[in-house]
Image 1 (cartoon, rainbow over the protein chains, first blue to last red):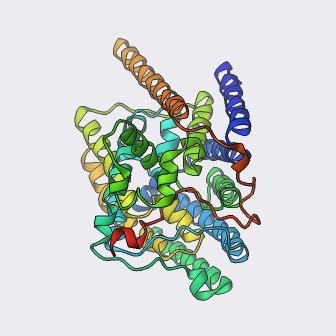
Image 2: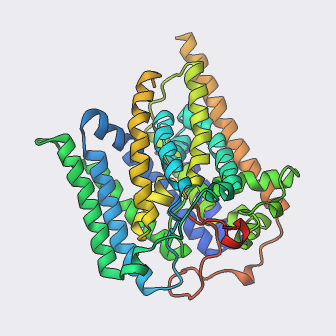
Length: 359
Length: 69
């Protein structure tokens, strides 16, 4: 173990002790969960973006197969828990025009930036230049999207649809499993026979992430999310310098958001796990540094713009690949399924733009 | 080789800046926020506690009455 890794492990232990003593036991344990997510994502190089691109461009289903495994495991853990314990919350976003547009733009932009919500976090933690540079833009976009969300919803939306509430446990689990098998079937049809479907590190990553995402649900009472924390950071900073009045905004004047703005970000669930992902990934990068190719100015400009749009669109879509796709599908939300269809459609354009601009 | 060294040095500086800004932001936030009342601390496990999470999540829309929908 390098000395850097030792110091980072010591620092992480000190953060754990600080959270334990001065914030809450729950947040300190969620910090460990976030670290585990960061280590898993970085060491397995578990990327939703890459998996989709491999499927489309190379007809290689290994990444998508691991994602389907993750979704299946997470749903088989989360849905029975949600059915049994009423205090646990599902990731229920409303089907809406904003969801359709937001998910499409997110899927397109994540191919330009080579990172979705979790991907941007772990690659930034590992020190990949583009993801490091676009993270502040992602956060700004997330804030702006949340500020404008009410306007977008005014274009038309339906109440959130919970498969669990509408159908009960077993039909919801059955429908979710069938939907995931349908995804695999479509992938099988696209890639044809004779392909390798499973790669050990991604299967291991999927299992570990399913366990960690479930721990997030059990500990925090809500599913794993990423982009809420990004928006909160910028909202707090903007409020602190007097550039934003949350009381004038439909989203931020909601009681739970006002409460988040009035207290330390260390009490926010998504902030703690996201910080853990950054540090966990940085720890992995000390031993296994990532490839970091140089970009020209045009690519940088496009990458940063994609980062801003990633943040904005993820709020319109009620989450990114984690908050909407993984947590949405795993907790029985219809919006998770709509998200994955629209984001994949956006990705079909994104991979072509990525090639055109030489990323 | 020289160009590569300059680039790596620049990348290291950006990485360091990122972490310093992040830590500074967290310290500033901690310093400006009201002290945390540990007596109001939630239970370690939300599951089985009967208490719903009060933290935000990206899937949560604005309340209907606020948005006028």
